[in-house]
Amino acid sequence: MRAGRPYEKQAADPPVDFTKVSSREYLAVCGQCHRQSAVRDAGPHGELNYWPSTPEFYPPNKSRPFGEFSRKAFYKDGRFRETTFIVESLQRSACFQKGQVNCGHCHDLHGKDPANNLKSLRFAADSDRMCTQCHTSQSLKTPAHTRHAANSEASRCVSCHMPAIMNSMLFRARTHQIDDVPNVARLERFGQDESPNACLLCHQEKNVAWLKAALRKR
Image (tube, rainbow, N blue to C red; front, side, top):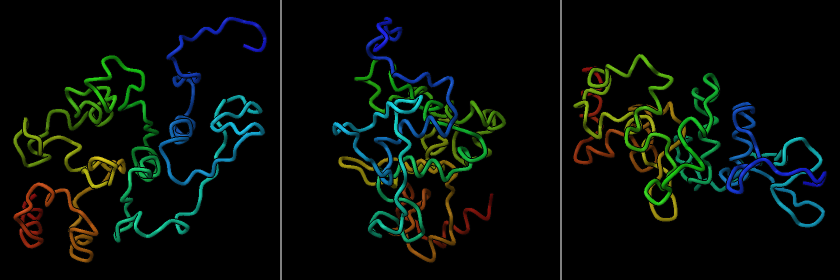
C-alpha cells in the first residue's frame, strides 16, 4: 500500500498467506489473541499486533513463565484450566510437536455461514474428520477404539481426547491438548475436581473403581 500498488487480497482476507507459513508461525499469528502468556509491547504509536520492521506483520511475542500466573489457572495435574491458554495447550500436544498440526487443520477462520458455525470448524457436521484427516487408520475402527456405538457422542474423537474441561466466560470449552487421554492415576491422586476425567464427565454416577475396571477390559 505504501508503494502505491493495489492490494490483491479482499477486505476480509487475512494479511498472511497461511499456506506458506510453518505451524509455529501459524500459531504465532493466532496466539496474538488466543494465548495468555504472550508479552505484548506496544509500538511507538501505541499499536499492538503490528510489527512493520519484520517481513510478517505480527510481532515476535515473548512468553511469560507459567510460574508467574496464579495457580488457579491450572489443574493440580498440570493441565490448563482457562481458555486463555488454548494455544499453549495445543503446543503441548504431540499433534503439534510431532505432527505439525496448526489451527487451520480444524478451523476455517473466514469460513462461510459463521452465524451457524460459531466455532469456525472446518468439518462442523462431522468433527471426526478433523482427526482422521491425519489419523487415517482410525477412520474405520471407531467402535473398537472407543468401546461405544459408532454414531454416539461418546465415539467422537473429541469426547475423549479433547474433553470440555476449560473455563470460559459462558461455557466449558474443550482442551486443545489434543493427545489428552483418560488417566486413572491422576484421577486417584487429585480427584475429579482437580484432574477431570473425560469418562466421568459423562458417567457422573460412576467412580474411580468402576473406571479402573472398565479400562482394564480394553
